[in-house]
Length: 75
Image (tube, rainbow, N blue to C red; front, side, top):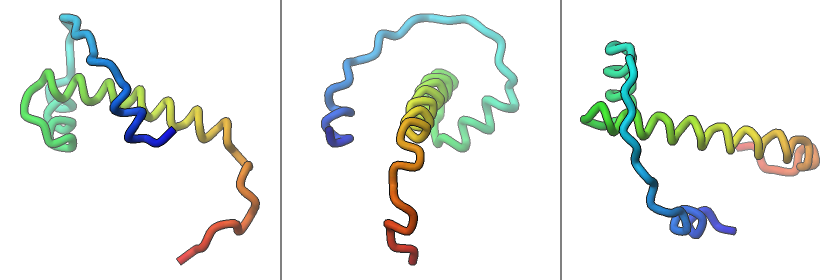
């Protein structure tokens, strides 16, 4: 399935109010790195990115050593 179709098939997330303590310096650094303006955006985007990376690494583990050596062009 193409990535575009998968992204389009995602449902609208249900937002839930949470209250927690966050390192202000880390929050500012993440806000700058992610290019967002609000604390809420940086938290939502960070959590989403962590979940996506976990999915990616599970895929990498599952498909490990499935490509034959030297099967792609190095440039």
